[in-house]
Structures are given as C-alpha cells and as structure tokens.
Length: 491
Ligand code: MN
Image (cartoon, rainbow, N blue to C red):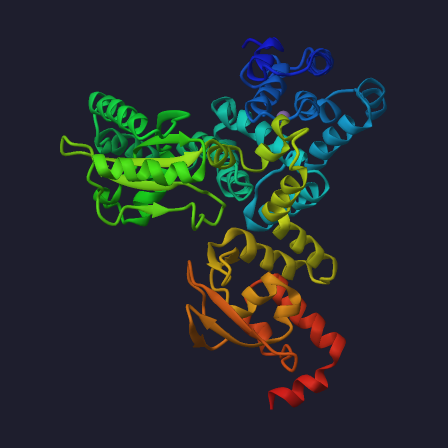
C-alpha cells in the first residue's frame, strides 16, 4: 500500500501548506508509534491507520480530523501517552483521539451489547460528532480487510457493521459510507443471498452501455438547446446490499426493480431541476407512476432529488435522477459535508449549525432522557424503538418534515414539534380529517394539532405515545402538576 501523505493531499487540492504539514507530522508520528506492529494480513499496522485517514479525506473532513484519524489507535495500542501527543499536536487533536479510544474496540454480542455500543456512540456524538466519523472510517477499513480475520469472528463483526455502523451512517445522512459499509459486510453476513444477488444483478441490468451513451448524448444536446446548464452527468450503479433489500421488500419480484442503473444529472439550482425534468419528459416518454418529487417532499433521511423513469427508446427503461450539486453532496456525505473544508469561512455558518442540529437533534433528546431514567433496561428498550425500528415521516401544515418511529401517534407528533404543543393537545386532524389522538401515523400524513390551554396530558397518553421523548414529557407534566387534576379530568 502506498502510504505517502501525497495520496491524501491529492484528494484535497486546496489544503493550505500548514495543514499539509500537520497531516504529514501525524503520519510520521503514527508510523513511528506503530512500528513493528503487524495486522493479520501481514501488513504493517500503520497501513490501517493511514487508510482510516485516507477515508476521512475522501469525505473531505478537516485536517484535525484527518490527523486524529491517522493517530486513532496510537493511545490504545502503543506506548505513546496522552501528554506526549498533546505536547506534539495540542489538546484539541488529542481530545479527538481520546474520544475514539473511549468508544473502544466494540464487540458485538447480542442485542444488549449492541445497544450499549450505540449508547457510547451517542455520548461521543453529543461531545464531538467528528469522533463518530473517525470511528466509521476506521470500521470501513476493518471491514474491507475482513478476509484476514479468523473465520468465526468475521460474521459477528460484519453483522455489527450492518446493524450498527451502517445504520448510524445512514441516520447521519452519509449515504456513500453506509453503502460501502454494507457492501463490504454483505458477503460475510448473508453469503448465500450475496451470491444470489450478484447473479441477479447481471440479469437485471436493463440497458446496454451503448444505449446509455446514446441517451446521455441526446439529453446533453436537448438540455443545452433549452439552456439548462448541466454541471455533471454520470451513471450510478445500485449497490448490492440495497438491491437485495429492495428485492426482499418486493418479495423477490424482479419486475419491480427499475434502478439497478440510474442516470444522475447535476444542475445548478432547484428550478433547473424542474426545467430539466420538463425537457426530459418532452424527449422520452416517462413510465407512468414512476415520477417522485423528493425535492418538495424529502425522504426521511433528508434525501432530495427528482426521480423519473423513462422508456429509453429500445424497449428498455432507465431511471433518471435530477438534483443540484449541494443536494448530491448532502446525500453522499451527510453530516460530514457540513463539517468539511468548504463550510469554513462560508457566510451562512449559522445555517450549517442548524442543519447539524436537525440531523442529530434526536440523539440529544435521547441522552437528555437517559439522565432521568433509573432503569437501564427501560432506556435500552426505548433506544431500540427509537433507533432501530423503521421510521415514518409526516408533515406539519407548513410542510416541515417530522421524523418519528413507526407506530407513532399525533401525541408523538405534537411533542416532536414542541413540548408546549404536546402539553395542550385537545384534538388532531390527519389530512384534514378529525381523528382520535391515538391514531397511527402513516408516511406523508399532514398532521394538524388542535391546541387548547385547558387541555392537559393524561396518564393514558403514556400508552398512546410511542416515542421516548413524548412519554417522558407526559410523565414530567403529570409529576409537576399532580395526578389529582389528571384523575379529575379523565373521569
Ligand atoms: Mn483502528
């Protein structure tokens, strides 16, 4: 493996000299500290930590994070002390490495352990989200070199990667990292299904390279006639694990799979997206029912894009995704795209912070809640509900998206919007119709809460609510305002 820092710099052409120097020093420091240690593959241990730093650079993380990634195993696996690292690199970088060390070498054993690992991640996240990004990049290299690990450990590590790390990456909006983690783990966790999917993948490919090129050529020509500027046009291949997931969802019905290959068109602005769509539909007949506007209504993880499927002219169909460069980077890098270089010095710094809060706000709720729970078991149970179960996303009358676990009710919705609303729910409307407040919410429902000063949380609401946060707030309100009123009101 070529472990020269130059490889990292190639990924970050605008990196100032002083930051290059920092990364180079981290390389020298880690190489020296790990000298003599080897990985199961027989390679120098340093290759692993360099690869972690390299992965961080592909996400365009800042130089402190890359340096910390390169040194992430130094405190745990070598004789170097925290003091020595601080003297050389300062407290801010040492703190990042300590954070990674605290996450520890997690071992998966059963669901409880798994949830415990997750709790550790949340604590780290609340402190500095970059620690979690380093850990995910560390895991990516470990899973990509899993063939050298003892066979009986492979399955366990791979399963943990899918259940924990990939989900975490997904919830942080880091689509590319999630895909890479899943695809590397897939053959170890489900070897048979993996083989099947590889075979299916070959037969499912709907369109030939030739025809694809033809379509691209025609689109470029037509879009330029209509003055729609294209920033980039490329094709993306669906990753195997998500293909398998989709097949499973459709009970292995292959005719439901339209997006093994999709064309991706990046344009300058959201209005260009709609204009491009118009041009494309004028040129190729769209497959009915396949158009999706994720710009107006984003997916629960924040994904935005226009999707359409066209008849490409030779009997095959082709999915086309139209988005802006920002939408694309947000989907690929998620939270990392807000922590990276390009944000530094940008005028809209506040918006970035808001975005980060939106992405990880739910983890803060959980942590806050954890503080006043006496029973660890209960916390674990609720963590499982809130994190591992499927989510629905519903809308406020103003169109804001609220992300809730499946099975949530208008009570959960009200508390997710604001505790003042939750504490005064008098009734609810779903899509304009009055409904009982324990109605189960479905994707894309528009929820309107009727708020009255005279309405208060009742004990039975605890059962009606699904989320930890709502249950906690209801209990808190009853505790503070006494159960007598509650008794009186519910009679
Ligand atoms: Mn490591």
